[in-house]
Image (cartoon, rainbow, N blue to C red; front, side):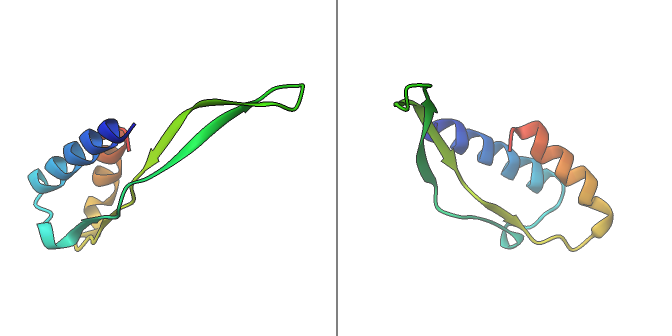
Length: 78
């Protein structure tokens, strides 16, 4: 999960830089992982896997680029 998140964030950072967003306007929080469970009818919980979460913050100075940058985030898998 961590590797996937790192790859997607790196891909989005590349996209942002190609769209003239300066490095000083891009930041990412520490990676957070958490277990995910399936809950059975018996009341038992079974570990399904782990979810990795990393928050990305972009300071946008040209509001007309908002939709393009959001589309880029979705295409990157964020």
